[in-house]
Structure formats: structure tokens, C-alpha cells
Figure 1 (cartoon, one colour):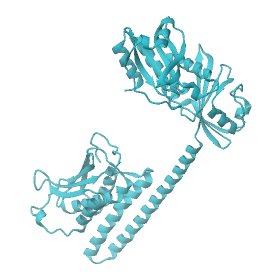
Figure 2 (cartoon, rainbow, N blue to C red; figure 1 turned 120 degrees about the vertical axis):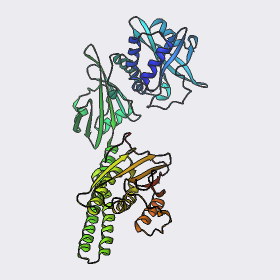
Figure 3 (spheres, rainbow, N blue to C red; figure 1 turned 90 degrees about the vertical axis):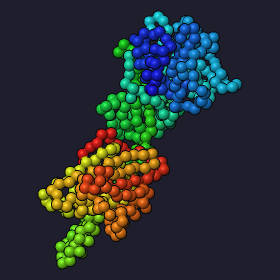
Figure 4 (cartoon, helix red, strand yellow; figure 1 turned 45 degrees about the horizontal axis):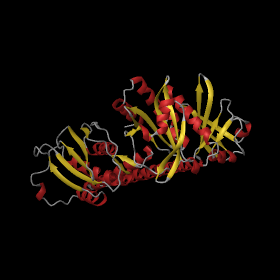
Amino acid sequence: MNLGKQLAAICRRETSLSEMQVSLLVRISAVFPFVADLVHGKLSLYLRSGRDFVIAAEVMPHTVYMPKKKSALGAHIAAQEEPLVSAVFRTGTRQTGKREWTYGAMIDMYAFGIHDGQSVLAVVTFDVDTERLSIHGYRCLLETAIDVLEYARRGVRLEAWHPIAPSDGIIVTDGRSRIIFANEAAQRICRVLGVGNLKGCLLFDRLLTRHITRETVEHDCPWQKEIEGAGMILIQRMLDLQEGGVQKRRIVLLSDVTEIRARDKEIRIQSAIIQEIHHRVKNNLQMMASLLRLQARRSKSQEVKDALKVSIHRIQSISVVHEFLSQQGTEDIDVQEVLHQIVELVALDLSDKDFVVHTEYRGPRLVLPSRYASSVALVLNELLLNTMKHAFAGRKSGTIGLRVEEEPQRWCLDLYDDGVGLPADFAQRPHRSLGLQIVKTLVEGDLGGTFALQNDSRGAGYGTHALLTIAKPDGEEKPGYQAESDPL
């Protein structure tokens, strides 16, 4: 449950606040994580519940370490245990004091009221270890946090007020864009840009912008832009606090993403190289298949022609995988797509031109890591070769399908057809088929699974099922899937 829904549920359960008042608190709560980061302290929201207080929201900061305490969310607190909160509810004025955070350790506590007309609707508190923070001009951060809470009463775009990172530079200006606060991270970033002391400078002063060589504004995020200068790449987030259409304060956040962009560029280059390698491997495999096809045409032996044709299909099945990887820009393979392409290749070569193959796919859409790619493609190829050779003799059409089920430790695949099925004595026959030996070796060896062939549950004449299992490696993420069945 997110912060707003959690807050609304506690308000309705523990208080007699109206829906408009609850809605106001929910709107303000959207900036709680941002505000907690800004003040470098824990934020709590107190509501009246009878004679007691109830804690309706708690947010820990991302910008400073604070020893964790047991959550008091939803807990009832006696009024005499929170004198500062009681004083704010009684007088409506801000209160400052001390509280014990851990045994023997005292920290500062700031309490402010959220007003609804003349009455105090709720009280926000900040628990801050200001002595250890040693932030020069901390009072300005505190006043800015209160302004943010007031500004949020009208509702804000949540994505603009996402939390602050510990390494972010924080700059605050007054209504005339003069800098009144800058933390150490902001000072360090701006020193690289050639500015010694930020406080007192105008935000758009030439001294601050002279080394900037590029600015890119995101259309969907007008408050944010990427700037480049002095060998640095920065994300600048500019948040204006206005009151009655007049600028009151401006918060500027600077994130140094130079290393991140360098890594992204390196990843893009590596991805392009890998795609090119897959493309070249695919071309080489297709050339090999063409040479074997040429050799098959010149051979006078039908047995040799059949053997070469099978080898061509095996090469092409691996080629399909490399083509897929070269086009997708990803190292994962979609089993449905690979199956679809192999069916087209096999059906084209092994069936009459008038023969129609219907394909279907049931269960989750299975996406496997690339290390399974070649083995899975070869297994599907061998099974489809057997199907096209034996299942549909004397028919004008047939159905080939794949059913997928996911279990905690493995994937279960059922590759089936509606052909003639297996002979009654199939289990007793000595099996010397190279294709089935390849399937068994790949499934049990490379894929860590099992393989079995059986007739449909209705008996012979209703089709064959090739049942495969593929073991999931430890830590393997679940594949992406679609809940409904899709035709191939």
C-alpha cells in the first residue's frame, strides 16, 4: 500500500475528518519523502484520535543515516508523551525541542501544524540530528521544507518531487533567484564549473553558466534538464514554489551523472558489437547451409541428400537464434518467436506446397536467457523434423502447438501435434534415431531437464506429445509472460 492510501485508511479508521480534509492530507503526503530528504530527518504525521494522537505517516530520509527504530505507524500515543505535538495542536504555532532517539542520545525535534482554516488538522514533526549534520544554514532548509508542504496543498506532479539522493547538490534561492543556501555537494559541483562561493550569487549569473556547453530540456519533464560543461554531465531539477502567482522560493537539485552516462555509452557500444557479431554468425551459418544445399543437389544418392537436408535444418535452427538476437538488441530469446520461425523453415522444406500448418501457443509467453538459445532451438528443430516426417502422412493440413507451464524450479513444455501418434509398440522398439538422441542429450545435459514422448491421453491417432522440462538456474528471474494464450 502506498503512502497516500495508507494515510487515507488510517484517517478514516481512527479520526472523524471529512473526505475533503482527508484528501488534503493525501495531497500533501505526496511530498513527504522529498521533504524528509530535504531536512535530513525522519518525518512523522500526527492526527487526533479521541484524547490520544495516532501516527498516520512515517518517512525515513535517504540523505542521511539514522539508526532504525521500530515503526510506530498506526500506533496511539498519549498526548502527555508528545508535549511539542500537543502544543502545536493547542496553539497552532511551530514548536522546537529535544527528544531521545536511542538510549542516552538526544536529537532535535521540529513540529509544525497543517491548518484547515483556523484549526490544526494534523501535525508534522521532523526528528533531526543537527549536531552531526553540521549543515551551515540549516534553518533555510527547514523553512523551505515548510514551504514545500504548504505548496503541496494544491497538488503536485509526483514525478517532479521524487526523493533526493545523498550525493545530490541542493541549492535554494529566494523569490528574486538569489542563492540563499547551497550544500557541500552543490559547492563541489559548482567549483568544477568555476564558481567559488554560491551564496549570494544570482542563479542565472554568467559566472554559473559560462562553462556550460550544452543544455537539453526533456519535453515531458519541463522542470528537468541535462547540462554538460567542464567535463561533467549533470541532471538539473528546478522546482519553483509560488504563492499567488508570485515566486517565493526555488529549489535546484544537481545530480552528477557523468560516470553513469559514460557507462551507458560503453554498454550501448558493447551491445552494438554483440548484435553485429550475432548478425555475422547468422550470415556465416546461412552460407554453410547454402553450401550444403548445393552439395545435396549434386549428390546422386537419396540417402546423402536426406542427411544433408537434416544438417541444413539444424544449421538453420541455430541461425534463427542468432538472427533473433541480432535484431532484438537483447540477450534473451522468445521461445514462441523461435518456434514460429523454425516451423516455417521446416514446413517449407518437408511438406507439399499445398500443405497447411496451423500453429498455436498456450500458457505464459516464455522468455529464456540466451545461454539456452542454441540448445532450445536444436531441440525444437529435431522434434519438428520428426513431426513433419511422420505425423501428417497423407493429410493436407495439421496442427503443431506448444503449451508452457511454469513451476518454482523449472519450466514445463509440451510440444504437441494432432497427427497419427506413436505406434503401439513404440516403447519396445530400439531407438537409433540421431534426432531423438540429440534431443535427449541436449535436454538432460545442457538444459538440466527431462524428455519424454507419448501419445495423446485419448489414445493413438490423436497426436503426439513431446514433454520437456527445463531447470531454472539458481537466482533465475521469472520469464516475462502474457496471461492469455496467443496464436503463433
